[in-house]
Image 1 (cartoon, one colour):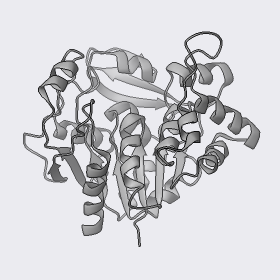
Image 2 (cartoon, one colour; image 1 turned 90 degrees about the horizontal axis):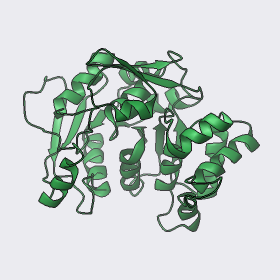
Image 3 (cartoon, helix red, strand yellow; image 1 turned 60 degrees about the vertical axis):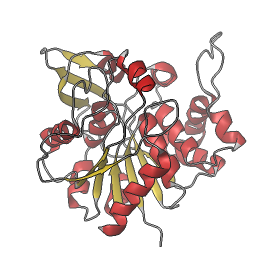
Image 4 (tube, one colour; image 1 turned 180 degrees about the vertical axis):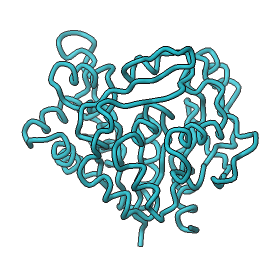
Length: 313
């Protein structure tokens, strides 16, 4: 029987993993952060009071058929003119569906039916939340988009209201999973942000399923500048203690010189996998690099690495 997998995160990294995993199991639950306050999602959040739909939309599309016309329509972005400037059709669709069905979670569920997705997508909470980061220079920065722009390292992340309750079915999904994957995604604004939700860490520590952290391929300027793979684990344990992660999947492959130069101009570099590990987390090193135009995980190679851990645990 195909394993029941739960994946927590947000952003491009989570969508990449889902594209790989859906080929191997239909029993997928994506638990997605709802802290985005920039771009189309931020505008809809401010103007209509809805939860930010962008990361949810990307996960729904990732779990749909790749060439499905509706999936392509969901990703369609209106031209940069007029009142619909830069909005995506999928974000507007999710906003409308949430209103019609009486809730954001039910709107997401109905959108999944429209796209005939393989699995399900759950917002981690139905509360409107805001991230606040305490930086290494002593300042506090409010809002995900502002945190992402900061060039100082993050010392601590908090979420307000604290702690927001987990959405319906979220804790249940974690406790019934055969394997739990955390990431890939922005360490603080996607991963730790999700774990700050009430009941999530407690459920992870209760679960007997393998808990697998997928480390990013590249550092993020400011947020994880200079971080090694172990630094990622240390940040999680600093916020939540030990027992949240059992395995760390880290990339041992090399990116091309062309990509290295392109990313270095933005202050982003490959995450180092060298150095001493704390021994509480088992480390799995594999070449997981996509051979395409971005320094990202290959969906299929990453999915197979995750499934091997789950099957052997």
